[in-house]
Each structure stands twice: as C-alpha cells, then as structure tokens.
Length: 401
Image (cartoon, rainbow, N blue to C red):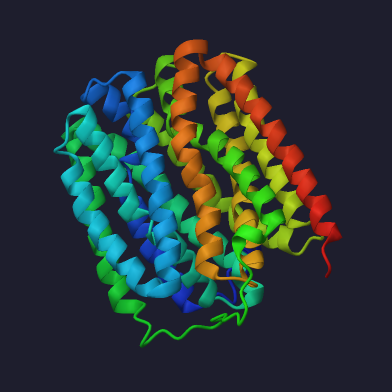
C-alpha cells in the first residue's frame, strides 16, 4: 500500500509551483460553483419555470460562454493572461451574488448570459497561463492536475451544495459561489503576479498560423462540440432523470455527482501518466474516451436497477478522464504554431457552443421523447463523433512531420 501511494505521488513529479498554485486557485473557484449542477433543479423547483423555459435559459448560458470564451482569447493575446484572469474572477464573484435576485424569465436569461460572458473569459487565459508555466514535457500532466482541482472542487461542491439547499435554500449557493470567486482572486493576485512568477515556456511565434486555416483542427473542433453536447447532459437532463425516474433527493444527486470528482481525483493522474508513456495517439485516446462516455448513457436503458447509475457515472468518468486531458493537449500542440489565446479559446469554445445547443436539445428531447429515447440519440451522436475523429487520424498522418 505504501509503495502504491509513493508511485501515485511520483506521477506529480516535475510540475512547477505556479501550476500547483493555479490548481489551488481553480479548486477554490470550482468548489464554489455548486449552482451549476443544480441550476436546472433550481429553475424548475424554486422559480417554477417550465422545461421549455429552462431549455432557453440554458441556451443563454451557452451563448454567454461562447461570447466570453471568444473575448477571453482575444484579450489574452492582447493584454495578457494575468489581467484577464484577475478581472474575470473578481467580476464573476459579484455577478453570482447578484444572480439570485433575478426571478423573471427575461431577467434570468440576461443574468445568466452576462455571468457566463464574464466568467468564461477566464478559461482561455487560465489554459495559456498553465501552458507558459509548464515545461513542454509536462503539459498534459499539468492539464490533468488542473482537472483534478476542478473535479475535486466539483466533488465537494455538489455534496455541500445539496446540504446547503436542504438547510438554507438555493439562495445560499449563490452567496458561496460569489465569495469563493472573490477569495480565488485574492489568492491569484498574491501568488501569481507575473513580476514574481516567471514563465517557463513563454512561446512567441514570429509568423503565427491562423486557427481558421487549420483544417485538421476544425475536424477536431466539431468532434469536441459533439462530445460536449453528450457530456453536458450530466449537468441538465441527468439530474432530472435521477429525480424523476429513480426518485433521488437533491442530497443523493449531489453525492452521485460528487462520485465523478472522487473517481477523477483518485484515478486520473496515474491513468494519464500511463497513457502518456504509451504509444497511443491523442486522436485514438480521445476516440476511446468518447466511446466510454456514450456507453454511460446506453447502460441506463438496460435495467431499472438503481445501481446502474453508479456504473454509468463510472463509465462517463473514465471516458472524461481520457478525452479531456488529451483533447486539451492536442489543442495546445496545434497552438504552438499560432496564437495560443486564439487556439485555446476555440478549443474551449467548442464546449461553450455545445452549452447553447446541448442543454436545450437534451431537455426538449426528454420533454417530447422521454429519457430512454434521448439516451439512444446520444449514442447516435457519439457514433458520428467517433467517425470524425477517425477521419482526423487519417488527416494527421498525411501532414508533414
């Protein structure tokens, strides 16, 4: 057991202290974002919105994410990642606190849109910061460490969030979200000021290639958009499925969603280290991750046994553990020949655009066709994503080395 623990710790060797600070800041921030997994429940239970209303609010969520990500990429390439991160985190804190006071359909749509515009300028800036504070050979593991922080935060967040709802109501979630964003900002200013923390791999490209002319990247972009639509069902339709079909309480839903973060915390870094040392291509690993994620929906239609929810969560988690770090690594690899902010904002934007359509489509499918048919449709979408990634592998083989 002691040897196993030592081997686990070795998978973290070589990561810079700045990346560790980024991970801690991300953990503080994400531990507070407990509103997001409960957003669909909050809108239907507390504000009494219909599923159609919720679907449009979720589309506003996604549209704000797209706009914020695009702005974040542009600002990162012009004023720098540090200024973008500080301003985004601090403003998001105050906006989250204000969001709880909106209660009409139009105001909630606008409020969610503005929150996501400001919040998601942070994401491309954070990925660029992580890239410049990482040695080239450690970048995939740096991504994995940041994801561990995100998922550890998500593991604690939903569990605590479910408890807060039962004791303080949904309003308490917005206060915690806002305060944790502000605390993360203060820590960022203290430990990651660029006057003190020096970049390790600050890539400057003399003649950058435009992301808009990178054809293989756009095949990858569409595949990630499809993956995003499928994955995001776990944050909109899936909590409703847990409640409507399996009669779980908010606290039980929080615990189940928290298992995702726990599995990732325990398993992801050793898994990524092992896969990094293997000969599998990034595209091949992303394909495998997508297949596992899609299977997590398929198993739900096999049996009504409540234990299948844990099996589905485990399949999705392993798929996510593989697909996300290596898709991010692929995007950073392509970004090394262009503007990093531009490339990484487009990578993040693939998931932001998925937010626009994924929640809306998923909720409408459930409303009109039921949960089982919706899960089969996700299976079909996943098959299309796999075909695109297979085509991407062939395209990459033709590129000059």
